[in-house]
Image 1 (spheres, rainbow, N blue to C red):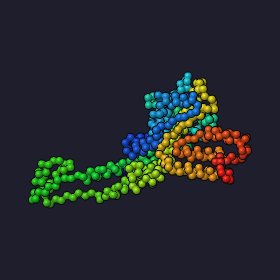
Image 2 (cartoon, rainbow, N blue to C red):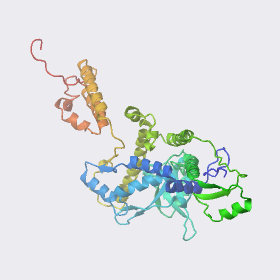
Image 3 (cartoon, rainbow, N blue to C red):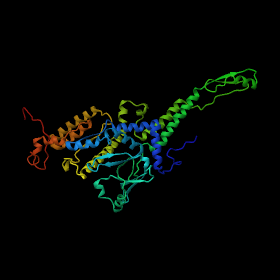
Image 4 (cartoon, rainbow, N blue to C red):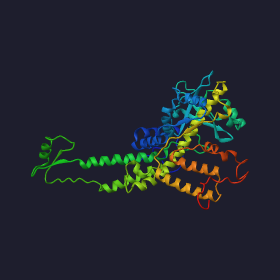
Length: 445
């Protein structure tokens, strides 16, 4: 059977497959293709880890955020994994919001990406997505939702963009897309680029399994000396089975030979490995993650993880920004209806989302780096090259690599010398304040 591209393109030109086709192909690959499913689930597990958490020094703000976060409908502790998975499969997500009129309480829904018919951008700014057209399977009439773009973005809408946006009267939604350029509002699935190769890999293994079955098959070869064709046929009727172990009867005048392609197991293993690595390499995944150990040892395995870790870190920051937009919108919605937050205006954004650790760090390497840094800082301070504030911030930066955060401001404020600086500092205004050095004792002190 001739191989046909899953993406529907029969040539090697670069037309973009229809949006509906991408949704169909990528969902099907996640649902039925073992390697396609593994790629999505692996990236989802690495990106979400043990979950995202929110912290804030303002207890009232933190209580409000947790109420939004843990709402039975929003339930982000549970649903964040599925949202990341679906974003990876489809490349775009549309989450409509439902707002309480009295409290401004925000609850989020989900729209099947296959229902998205069009995404509209500001005619004068392709980066600013202002609305979404949604198919309505029940009434047949489309719905038009405004995208949530924030107060600041609304101030830069063009006149034509604002006019278009005013016509979207069926609600608001969060619209998030990945793997996109500025004028591609739909985004692209993480596995669409390798869809055909995933299918080809599956077909290769399927064909090979069929070949193995045939190689394991056998028949009973019965030779009747001196018998004519009629006698052979009559004798063969006693053994009608045509499966493995079937009987073939012939006389000395008939010879059958089984002819098969001479494809050695080594050649097949190489072909499978090359195709698999072509797929994994596109996603920055080393081969030993999918059972292909090869010549990898512990040292080289650790070094080969850097590209996928970079991808995971980048995607985690994307998810963090999405969550921040949700929280900011929930806060603003409460303020718009006069809900008492009891939070000072300048502290409304005083929260932090903690990103889960995707991989284990080699603490021994970071520990050695900390020791070297401290030694270098001490030398620099003795020469007057390093001031107190820079030293604290530099130390906090390197320690953060092992997952421990230092409150730099708290450390600096606790230092009496820094507290009076620059007005009363020993170096005077605009001068370098050296790091504290241990007091010398004994002769020459």
